[in-house]
Each structure stands twice: as structure tokens, then as C-alpha cells.
Image (tube, rainbow over all chains, first blue to last red; front, top):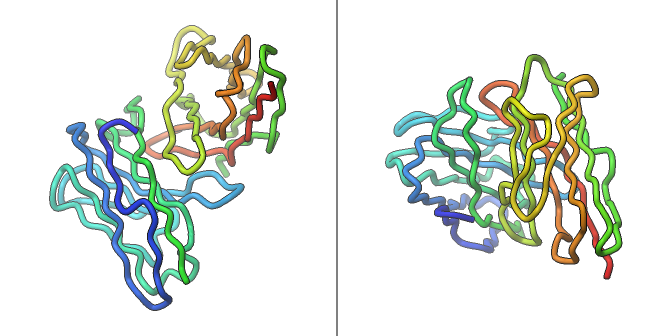
Length: 116
Length: 111
């Protein structure tokens, strides 16, 4: 899992609540990513950020929000607008995201979110 | 639409036998290709990647993968399986700035 930490490991949310998942990296990587993993499916990109104070929507951004105020941190908020938030959430980082980059993405240990 | 297929949901192999986990893709251009492994309730660990050059790529834990451009495949292999190789394996393809992921293959190595 390298130098990427995610907290908490397990998170329980009541319907209608917003929750924030933490992701921190000490790899000095410029790019950071949030993925959602559901059983039997590949990873789906929620948001990504190439640089501080900038981020872009991925394939399934609805109901989620992010911020990138520091290079090391990329928190994800799961809002009440996300209708089916129960999933395993993975944060990743890479040196960069340029179109021709060969950079490898390195992953944190994940946060399992359950809606009660 | 661009896609990555891992045609087997599960692969069962006896310990000591060779293993293959299959991956095929349908993307434009010359993508970069990756394999990751995931142990239960853990994040993904990078195994290996193909960028260019030799079609046989060697990676971590004795794994290797063979790139076949004509068949658009990137199969993961290991000559002799270990019980500890049991995990979920993901193939990913990067045609541009974004990774496209396969659904994963569960590898079970039986003693």
C-alpha cells in the first residue's frame, strides 16, 4: 500500500448523511484519484486531480465531491445525493496524469462504507 | 466503446502448477497495460506493466505477462503457483489519461 493512507478503514452512514473519506500520500505525487469498487465489477473512477486546487469528474461523479487544497491530501465526500453509496472506496496516486504518461498508480488500503 | 475483458471470473490451479489469468482489450491506439493484485479487504498492489519493447514483461512475486498485439491480449502467467498467490487479479489498460479496468479474476490455488 506504499505511502498512501486512507481512513477510516470502516465507515457506517445513516441515510441522508454526508460522510468524508480521508486520503493522504507522502510520495510527493502530483496526481490523485478516487475509485469505487463493487463486487464483480472493475474499478470505476469517481474524481481525479492532476494538481493542487484542480480536479476533474470521472465516470461516476454524481453524488460525490472532492477538494485538493494540499498536494498530500484528497478527501472524498459522499453526499446524501449518492443513492447507493455502499461500496469499497480506493484512493490512488501517481507522479502525473499526462496523456502520454506511463506512470503507475499506487493504491491505499481502502475504506469500506456501509449505509445503514 | 473501449473495454477490458477478463473472461474468467475464477481460475483454480493446483499448487506447483503453472497459472494463466487472461486479459483482452478493445481500445484505440497503443495503450499501456497493467496488472494489479488485491488481497481481501486491501488496496490494489501493482504487479507489472507493459509500455513498449519486449512482449514478455516480468514483475513482482515471480509473475510475468505476455503482450500479444495481434490478439490484443495481455495474459498474466506464473510458472509455479503458490497458495499465497490466491487473490483477486485486475487487468487495466491506459489508452490515454484514464485507466480502463477489467472486472477481475479470482485466483484460487489449492494445496
